[in-house]
Length: 95
Image (cartoon, rainbow, N blue to C red; front, side, top):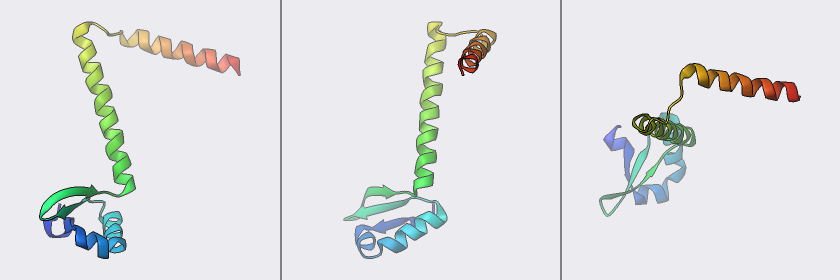
């Protein structure tokens, strides 16, 4: 983050929103919008936002998996691959 470039007051957003959006799309860095000197919002380009959401979803899946291990809610890798193969073969033969 480049502090002087990536923190802007709300007045800047109001008066130069097109410039700000161009900056965000070029740098792929989020910009913090302040109001009365306090951070109030973050603006991010759509591609970076999508990557962030995908990363968070992957971390949720991993956390869920890690919670399942102590509970014994696991399956052997060979069994999982066999189930996947069986499922794919069933789909293939239906077509």
